[in-house]
Length: 82
Image (cartoon, rainbow, N blue to C red; front, side, top):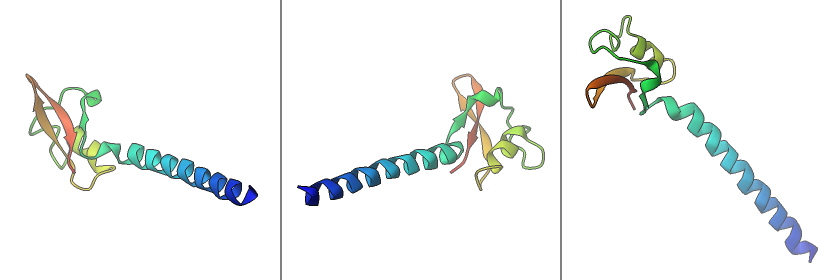
């Protein structure tokens, strides 16, 4: 009986730890390839400017390709590129 209990317990621990790793990776990587309406209104040409734009600066702090002001309905939001 102990032959099956210990491997099963180890397997459960491994599975639980890998799901936590995936959750951490998802949270850290959630900035890229994602829209960020929480930054507020995004003005194309100004907020996605590589020199001084708030969207660009926000996105380059965690993504390599920066960000753009993407049209959603009738207004623009910041979108970090993949």
